[in-house]
View 1 (cartoon, rainbow, N blue to C red):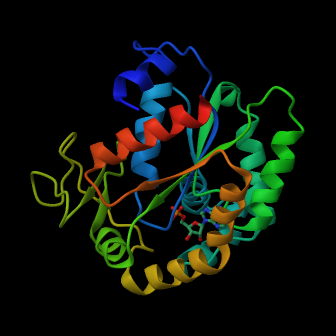
View 2 (tube, protein in one colour; view 1 turned 120 degrees about the vertical axis):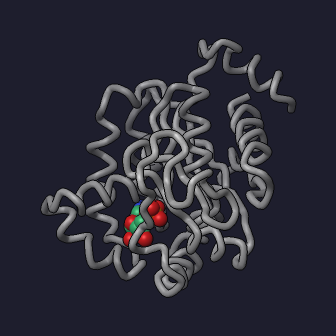
Amino acid sequence: MTAAATDAHVGSKGTQKVAPGPILLLGAPGVGKGTQAKELMAKWGIPQISTGDLLRYHRDHATPLGQQAKETMAAGKLVPDELVTRMVAERLKQPDTAAGYILDGFPRTLNQAEWLDRHLAADAKTLPVIAVSIQVGYTQLLRRITGRRSCPVCGTIYNICLQPPRVDEKCDLDGTPLVRRSDDTEEVFQERMRAYETQTAPVVEHYRARGRFEEVNGDQPVEKVAVDVMTAVARLRG
Ligand code: AMP
């Protein structure tokens, strides 16, 4: 489907003809879920709900949840389902989720997926969930993760090798010194990949088996991945 067809589906001036509903972005660490979620957010005006961002907020503000999750996150392991689902349930109560939302980094286990299925089934007004899985090879992921930097003020994501800022280690938009996530090291990446392969890969199969699922090649320029993700979403909602 072309970009024009995607526009026709959602309204060319940002006016929504069809509510996008719940959208899941699936994929290993570093495939670009956050970047693509921001594109979808701009297109549909629906929020990105990143469980990683929510957990980092709790950790940085030393809330009880943040204190419980901190060590697990530093080790690249998954935070217990019960903590994460409670946090997501709270977030989904916010009124900005009424027309839809993009879940980025959730569900990460079969338990979380089953919880989400039950949670959505209990709400008669919600559209069925659609899932887009982004694929990127291991070596490329490692380069992306270890080179990843972000602006702590505006959230723009860079990569010092693949997509560097104009001025070394400074944000192009506001000049703020860029930061590196403490878990974006090679050692923690390997643990995060292990968690992905053992606990999250079955989630991809869960949604594949249920239909309303598409795969996108994430090893392409960001804009091309964005077109493919938009096209997949439009087709799945068609
Ligand atoms: P992310 O920013 O999505 O890579 O997440 C960073 C870290 O937060 C992960 O390595 C986990 O420790 C934790 N985390 C994020 N989302 C989840 C989730 N859905 N379930 C369990 N742990 C999570």
